Length: 146
Image (cartoon, rainbow, N blue to C red; front, side, top):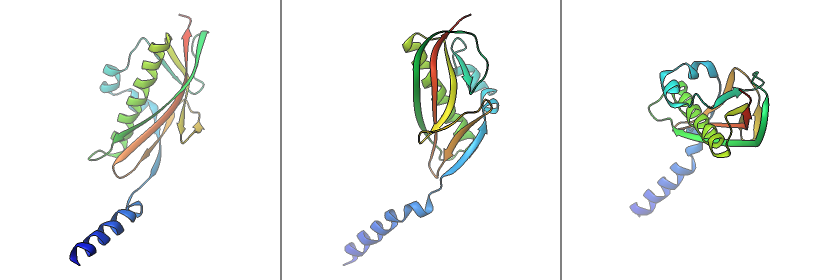
């Protein structure tokens, strides 16, 4: 009988867990993240990143648009720390895609959370939960003229 009661309690606890979880949308400043030493040391300076409609050189070749959807462990991090960390992961993925395709830049980078596009030169969308933070981006991989 005690075992059945324990199982029933666990089932109720896990089925009620969405009540205890959070999903907070943040519109964070790109510049705040990009100024950190971690970003400066990890991002490839040879592959340009252009958010929204930021100006860039002439496009010589487009390889198409590519989405990325990254999550990170947000446990023991502030929402800001988690968002900046997962943004870095998403940008590294876009740069890796540019390398793979033969491009030297990613332009028109936009937030793409749950396939909802938000275009901004200054902000990106990040969602934080109790244990996970997520950033989804989409960007066009291109070769720009020097």
